[in-house]
Image 1: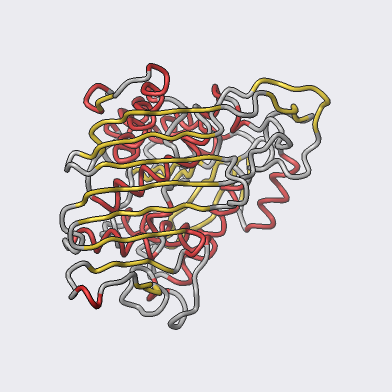
Image 2: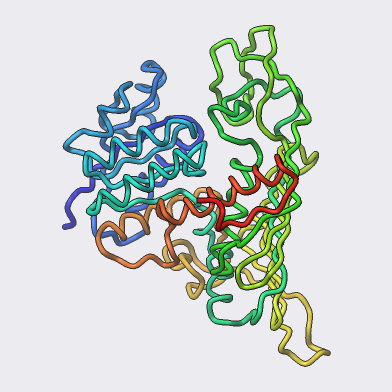
Length: 396
C-alpha cells in the first residue's frame, strides 16, 4: 500500500477546479507511488471556500495561504492563484521543504520568476512543476515523440497561435487585465502555452525575438463591484458603474528564430471573434510536418514527405485509437475520446510519479524550464516596446 502524499492547493477558482478534479481522479486511473490526499484548500473567501472544500473533497480549508504552504503535514503545495502572488507562495513552500507545482506563467515578471528559480535550486530536496498542461494532451505528446525520433528531419518553420474571443468590451476588469497583477495579457495568458508547446515539441530553444506588436484594443473596462476577481470571462459578475484602464495587451504577434535555425511566427489574442479556444501548433520539416489544434485535441495531423509523391497527403491520427499513444492506455477503450480535464490528470500522474522517482511519459516542465519560457515573454515585451530584435542571450 503506497504511503500518503498530502496536497495543499492554493486557489479555488477556474484552476482550483481543474486541479481538484485531477487529484480526485488520478489515483483511480494511474498506478502511483503515493496515494494523493486532498488535505487542504486555501483561498480568501471563507464562505465560498468551505462550500468548495465540501464539494471537491478537501479535508481541511483555510483562508491563510501561508499556513497551508508551510503546514508540516503537507508534502506538495499546488499554486493556482493570480500571477503576482506566485513568487511569495512558491518561495514560502520551498523554504518549508515542500514540493511545489505552480500555474503558468511562472510569475508576473521576469525578476519574480528569477527569484522563484533561485529558491528552487536552493531547495535541493524539493521538486518543482509548472502546469503547462497541454504537454499532456496525447496528440501533442505524440508530436514531441515524432520530432525526437527524427521523423520531421530538419525543422524549417514553426507556427504557434492561440485564439480566444472572450475579452471584448463587455468583459469587466478582471485581474487578468491589470498589468501589475498579470504581468501581461494575451501574451502571458495564452502565448505562454504556444511558446512552451513549440519548445517542448521541437526540443529546441528560441534564440531571438523580433517584430513584436502588443496591442490594447479595449482601453477601459467596467470595475467589478467586489474587486478584480471573478472567473476568467467574468460571466454574471456585478460591476460598480465605473471604469478603469486596462494595462495589458489584448493581442500579441511576433516572429522568432530557434537556435537550430527554424523561423517561427506566434500570435495570441483574446479578441479573435468566433474562436473560443483555438490553440494551434504547426511544425514543418524537411521529412514531414505536424499540425495540432486543441479544439480537436484527440487528433494529430501528419504529413510524411518521405512517401512516394503519389502517396503524399495529410493524414489524421486519432490518438485515442490505441494504447500505443501517450497516456491513452490509462483511460478508455479505443476511440473513446479524452477531454480538457485529462491533460491535468495526466500531469498530476506524472508529477506524483516524479516525486516517487518515476520517469514521466514526456518531459515535465519545472521552474527552470518555465523560466526559459518567461525569458521569451520578456523578450517579446522588449521587442514591442523598443521596436527591435532581442537576443535571448541578453535576457537573463
